[in-house]
Image (cartoon, rainbow, N blue to C red; front, side):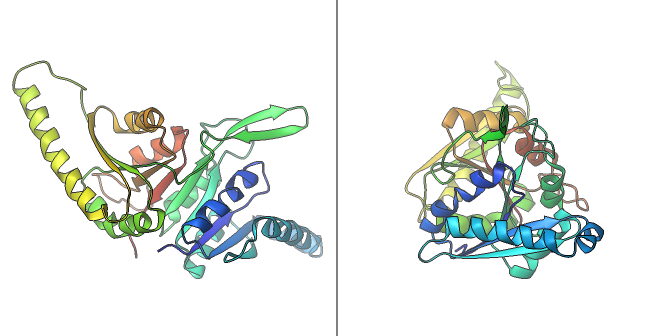
Length: 292
């Protein structure tokens, strides 16, 4: 069960969208939310005599009151330093189930610009990270943002590449499935051309699709006790492009991906497919990482 989540708050138009999910998460067992804001320049804070910290604490306390509800404990936290490192360090220290944050870029001008902080958190985190993408709109009175769906936990698209890394993610996926208990679609995208009309290539592709379908069925059996409905999909194409496309086609409210693909883990590098899915998806993306 996931019971504690770290919300990274930057007081942008994103914050309201992030906090709007608090009630939805509480309904599936969330017990505690930590609202974290990171101040980047310690020297300026010292020169200001702590006034900036007090202002941030006041704003966080106001947000906490807005989402407070019976059975949900909300705490606030202010850190100073490198935002990505402070976020991941706090998540580790507080033993949260996952980090929840937005990806909008510092200037809030382009949905396809993955924020530098979000990008770094995805690479540094030792636990799952949920990223909410937002299409930012400039209006006369400032910026506002729109998301592709109003709820996160309605229909989840779970992707698998059948790598050894993904095998290590199964316990984490099972934990989330047991908490969310919503309809899921299990998807595998076979890299390559969509169709071969005839010949050995067509036969090999069909046989591979059959094997992968059986593997998806095995994964479904592991999760069947937790979800009211399962669909299975095996398709062919570029995974980085086809995963967001399928999310739109199925009207998925959340995409679940592993942090790395068949290439495995190399230092702090995020898998290229995962990075592209997070960058280009209109839907929220939950990036899973195995337990330490």
